[in-house]
Length: 405
Image (cartoon, rainbow, N blue to C red; front, side, top):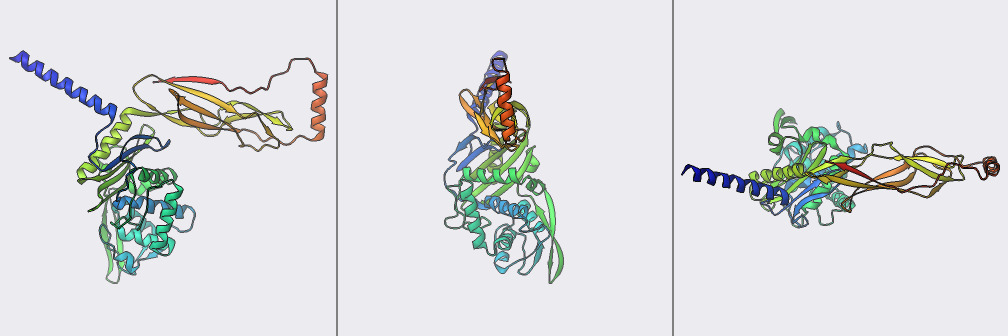
């Protein structure tokens, strides 16, 4: 009897292990209308389901609102300490809010904090009006930015995400705008990772503190969480664009239309776990690494050194021996004058025949145009040393291998 019980337990453990391994190999099953996992640096999609289905996004809409706020700050069209006067329209917003009153004044910093942490609809509309003059004009900016980012299946109708006819986007498009926000303006994490904060209402009744609670439960439950935005309405159900960073890799997990808030957060965590368990970023040559030289036509020197412009990380699957092929492609020549930093070629990285990344090559030194005297001296030297061996300046396009585990 004991032996049979032990055997049964062993079989159960083996079955459980096999099921777990299968889930990791194929990716988790997500109970939501749509989902997607993206690696932020490369923009690669690691797993997706109905990622291009048009759905109501609820307050995940505010990722675009946040993006345009940080863009306006970066371009110095607004400043953190600017004072915003709340309109009656902004104060009338329902749903999640900080209960701004008409004519109430708050700084750009306080309103932005309320949007990022507490998903405040009234604060989002107040900021939209401050930046663009009206919410309608701001929505035009939102849609223009969406087009520029390649969000081809998105149409915004408002700045806060309340249900409205035609206010639709997709999991893929949400990942695109989330990626743009966190890569260009990572300072958003300073607010997005705050659990509790407060603002002070200043009205005719005097000053009154109002608490802000982060709507993103992952910042307490999932190590490495950096943001980003939750949302829920009767039409959209429960949604999230979750961002996290571990082992030097940033992931974006999007879940739309989950049936309840717990499933929303659990689904985001399953997607993130899948990404970190099965993929890794591998750093290639560092910025400034020498990659040979390029011929310069009619330059003071006949060749200029070529270097890597910026280090590229390539995304590869974990768990096996990886071979990455690197093909260096340098232009045949450049005409003088040549500026430092001018494009000289690229390095293309492939894994199992598929491209996984590229590094741009640039000229490391400025090369001035040769004077007539420089050209005459060069011709004279060639005539004097004709027939003697001279260093070759022919360009190569080598293929190198790198193995990693």
